[in-house]
Length: 452
Ligand code: PLP
Image 1 (tube, helix red, strand yellow):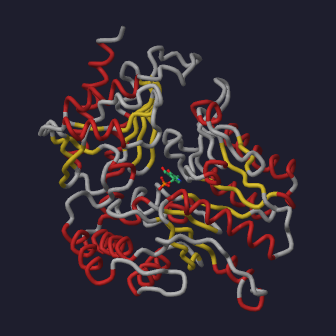
Image 2 (cartoon, rainbow, N blue to C red; image 1 turned 30 degrees about the horizontal axis):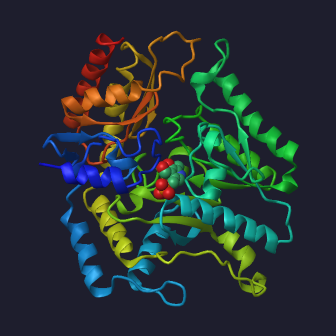
Image 3 (cartoon, rainbow, N blue to C red; image 1 turned 135 degrees about the vertical axis):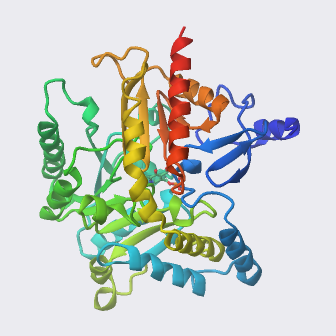
């Protein structure tokens, strides 16, 4: 396929997420033009296994007629109408279906346009509630190093990608960041148990130092996804929620990546980590990536605090033109039905051990410093010098080199600095997992053999 014209349009006009300013206008990005099942096809006609499921989102795989048909039918019937004063039955039904699958009393679904706006909505609601309860100083949000919660001003304020502050301003009065919870970064003489105690103590000390009367919420991805699939030590999430609730701090579980099957359950908070959050944020897998949509889901208790006899004429004046978009809701409902009909959650639970075994099998390869993951999420962190005490976060182009070598062999990954991330569509089979890791192994050896 001749893409010369599109390449020019792309370079001249399409400003991409995380656009690098040195290369702007001069990029040679791979065009992904077609898809089927767990594969995408690039402009050279190569059919590649989709390692990151788009971007942690294409749960049921590509080319699903059921979703395309549901979206088309909805667009013909009612493409859009305002959700502010009116409503539509497909979004109402989707909200009910989501609420049926959330843990406990998380029954109130605020639809957004994606994950960042879901996080914004969650934080704005927490501040709104505290104002209504007369706790006007209780506003700080505790987050963690390496967390990613979005790209709006507010969701970025609680994110901690360390390259951001070099060039982008940040709201500095909102968030407090806890140190990295990655067990890889623990001191050489520190046991995992001691590391867990330290990380839990970090949270409690922060709440006490800031003053519980000033801390509104703690926001945490159960597994830090974009930070490099960082899996905190076992039991960390449960210990943290207990501390939060002891000090009257709300727990926001950011499940933008982990919900809708990636950990083998609709939501990971309760089923995998045994926590009952006050708020869950989700997006991505909510519609299997077929249409943009996110949601902030609130507990009955939080809603009761600000409504009915406690309403006091207040309006939660937060909302989006596309909140509850009917076409996105139709996509989400269709995706949910596929997950249920095909037993995809059970399938994921069955294949997780094989995926994680193959991932661990990469740990001893050259260049690989750490192979880590959980559920159907994995990451390899690489360095030219594998020594435990070397700077494990340098070698910026290594992830991209491994991804390029994979693409030549039939697999596309998500390179992130010196890491590569895997989170394939949930319908991936055991044989396809083998193929994926065989290619990755071969690619790592090839990159190692050509090191400069
Ligand atoms: N929260 C988490 C945990 C994410 O991984 C992301 C995106 O990667 C977001 C929020 C932001 O979502 P979006 O890009 O849909 O705005």
